[in-house]
Amino acid sequence: MTASNPLSDESTLHLDSTAQLMNSISSRLADRLRLVSPSGRRRPAPAPLVLVAHGSRDPRALRTVQALRDRVRELRSGLPVHLGHIELNEPLLPDTLAALGAAPAILVPLLLGRGYHVKRDIPEMAAASPAGTRVAAPLGPHPLLVDTLHARLLEAGWPPARDAVTRRTGAVVLAAAGSRDPDSAADTRRTARLLADRLGVPVIPAYASAATPTVGTAVRALAARGRDRVAVASCFTAPGRFATQCAQAAPWIAAAPLGAHESMARLVLHRYDQEQARTEADLASA
Image 1 (cartoon, rainbow, N blue to C red):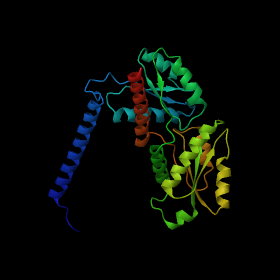
Image 2 (cartoon, rainbow, N blue to C red):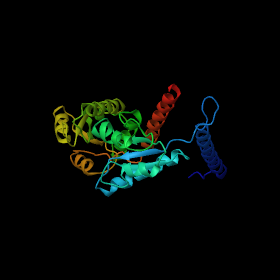
Image 3 (cartoon, rainbow, N blue to C red):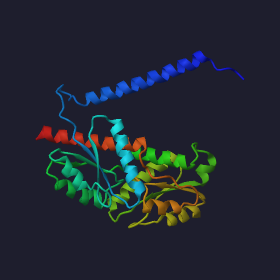
Image 4 (cartoon, rainbow, N blue to C red):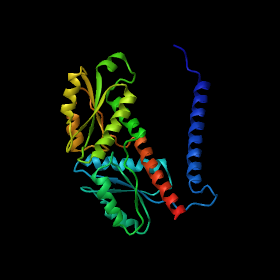
């Protein structure tokens, strides 16, 4: 057995520490640059970011969205990040907005496509706020969402390489909550296409309610096409009744919900930044 080289180990530790220090400096510098506008003037304090979760009776859901909130805070220090729910969990969104008072917040729905909550519930709650609250786009479809879906599938046992067997017999059912809104279904189909491009196998969207096909129907359709290694990808932000039901229908492996993955936190900040930029553009043109 070859003895390790203490000097080499020490050098590696030094390089790791240096890399961590540089990452920390870069993050702090980026935070400071966000405070300065392109004209060189200091920007006003950032608008609070409010994560808007649906709410669930499953206690794991609340813990999951709280963990995602904390991860967003870690990625962008100095940005006020809050949490509000549409129903079932506290704090409810109106209470979160009331606590913010006159601060004009930006709401980021932890929802994965357009639907009733995105188009009606959240905007109505925002309009009832005394401040100039704005609503960002939902999280999906987006490549960062696909990054998270892919990562969760790998964790569940999906092959990391595109081997011939997986390309020939593998497939994925993308399980989502479902909605009667056609825009919601279009967004889920778009996410399914992006995931199919990433994996190199068919990906069929399926739904827990309000839309078809169900996960079981999608699995049978894939089996009829010779796809007998079918995984279920969980297009749910957090654990809950629908996510559990869909996972139970998996014939092979079932991925965990999206949760507090780093790509999810980055996607939240991306939606926030998009809406912040639109806000600034509206003010400039006013």
